[in-house]
View 1: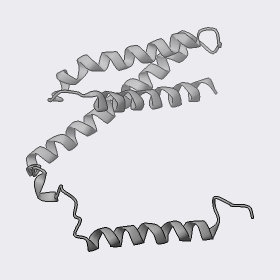
View 2: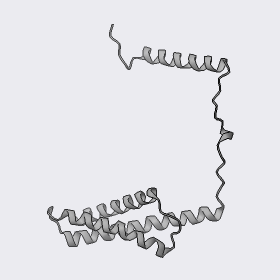
View 3: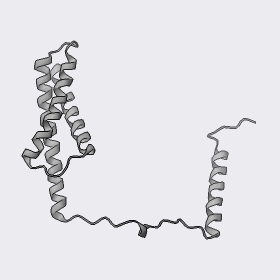
View 4: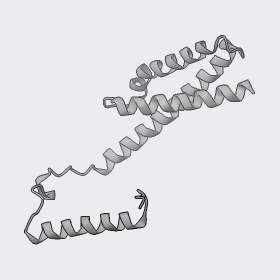
Length: 138
């Protein structure tokens, strides 16, 4: 008799055993040692804080998009259409991301930009750069 990993009988047995174990654990009074009340409550943000974060998010998206488009246009004119100088276009992209570090304080994006923010900014700039350069190459 061959045992097949994806057979309905095997999965039915697995579900039966797991339900049986869970029921038997609850019958003996076992409860998790950590409850929801043990975690600290995260304070809710005020309407002004949420509005400020939303506006800053829009600014980050718009600036990274604009810089990505400019980097794509500059890459097209300076790197040309050849494969030989394609690395120069990527260098222009890197500078476009780096320049944004100094632009955000000028447009009143307050708060510290963390790794998650820079990943988002870099991805948006990369996306707009790639699309604009690709459209110009065609």
